[in-house]
Length: 429
Length: 93
Image (cartoon, rainbow over all chains, first blue to last red; front, side):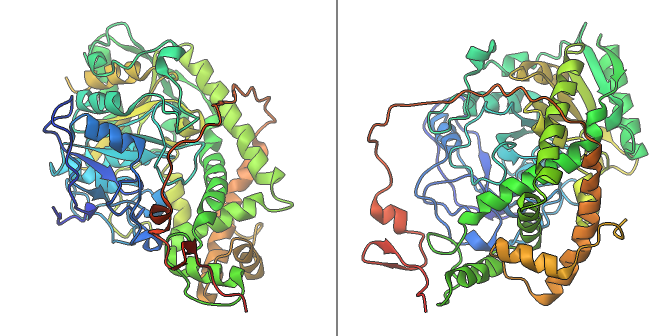
């Protein structure tokens, strides 16, 4: 099924099993998640003809649960973007706000759910790539605790930060999809069993909207500098939670002011290493030239990669290069540890933390492409969560006066997806 | 902002060589300008205190047993060029 907002890169159907919790449901899959026999491009010209010989673990679990996969969704190239405009297959338009971006990098996944062209979808979140498009398209997205969901078969961008997670119209459906994909996998050694972390996998049951007595922390750093229309919508949603019996307090997390820089240094550094595999020999676009190997590979990569990917691979190479490692990479790791400890402190006095998911409403199409730094700064509220390995959910909080969706982000303790599901479901009442 | 962390086009070219990515000349100039702004924002990391890191990491081990993997044919299916069951790289002149 093709869409007029360019949500799918490949619209081949993968049939699900006969029964299971997702029988008769469609779940679209982001195009950086491997599907055996169905091309998986990562939104890149480099992989425009790449057909994986195996399924990602999450795809196996979807099919076993009875889900039908209607197609592979459009995305920023290799997940690198906040607007889904860096795809080699063209930008995605926001189906609920025509003329605006759907957010990124899982913009196709959020768009097909918002438009009703798929019941649910899988996205991936390295620095906000599930929560941002969920927020901009007015749907629900969950970035799971690091290690909850297997990354086997996910084409790596920044492995220490990224997780696969659900996008759905409601919190309960997102929680149900998370139940299907979560759980340890011996093919991804970074997965952990939630039951061994004092938790369980019954997420959908937590969508009971019962926030009576819940304590919510609001990190002031994530409201400073946010667009006024977003801040207004956020506080209106907080009033709603309060009316249902939750209470909130403001909390200072000074480390969060450094999250965007730390995130980009770490993500770019990991990307420069992960994307070294694309040399056009085993897969991908071949330079097709003879001569010096390094020059041949450099030409294949010039042809196969788009601007944003080149920018990040180069900046990552720079941050790791002799003389700069201590200045950038080591400092970014210090910032990461500082952010983790700030979150630990804040979550010892609150059940969940709340903020706007994005500091701004959706941008107009074409507005942010020429200014990468401004685009990076839009990730201020989402990146800290990846650096801290914590779970977070984006739920619709309302709309600005001009009808643009605003999302509210809830952050919980590690392996306590239940807390964010519970608080998020209360906002749907 | 870009004045104190100016990035020279030659530096961009050097990093591009290290990363094995060819760049057109116009790209080199544009990246030099953008990198100056981006690196200037990264300067704020200087304010981050040194933090004691408690890594809660444990090695995950498994027995080294033979398991099914991809067949040679499957492994080669996406290669632009193959010969006699091998990947074929560029000819070295």
